[in-house]
Image (cartoon, rainbow, N blue to C red):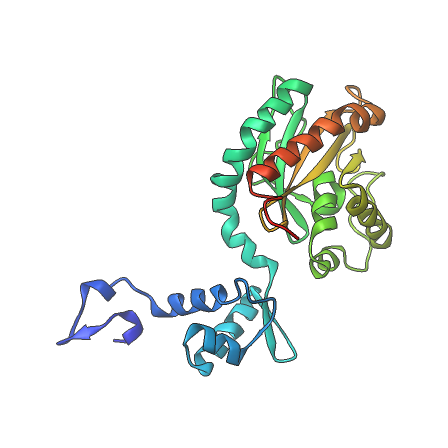
Length: 271
């Protein structure tokens, strides 16, 4: 029996170690070593921080790299945004939705339009929560639903505030899929739009995802000033014009996004 499967005393596995997987413990230790010390660390630095031997650290980081949780650059290693996916389930089910849901309900009741919260995962956004009142949506967008980031206001906002490497990986060089005739498919044009979004702090789309639907979105920040989600509202083209969307609905949307961010600790740290 491997010692990673438990400690052996007199040929028996002790109760304390019976269900303990040392390899997992070491892998989590390596990932945790980046906290507050990254973004890039060498094998030697990781070994010193974790107390593990360099051969063990090397096997762990190479495994993380193969799984997409780490990347190597010139002998140094960094975690990738895929690591965030490990925390999305908790984030979406507990802290973020606990804070956001009552504020989203208030916004929906005030404006009479649906609101939604989503996070970025690669080239897609993932719905974390959605509030509707009295209207049947044309498409089912329950929590867990994925949509292409390049065709949504939430996706545009999240791509605008993502790490440059993640934005480039999502956009690529070739034409992006067209969902409607108004979908922005040129990566270069979308990059220009993302720069505008970073400057003004919001985005609105007019039938780029679905014919007959408009939406606007604003970023939600955490205590580390990361855009961990986007808050959006949507309406039918017969319900509101783009002028109404950006003139009447956008200010309270932004105020709600700020309120959620502040409740998550944004703005509490200097810098």
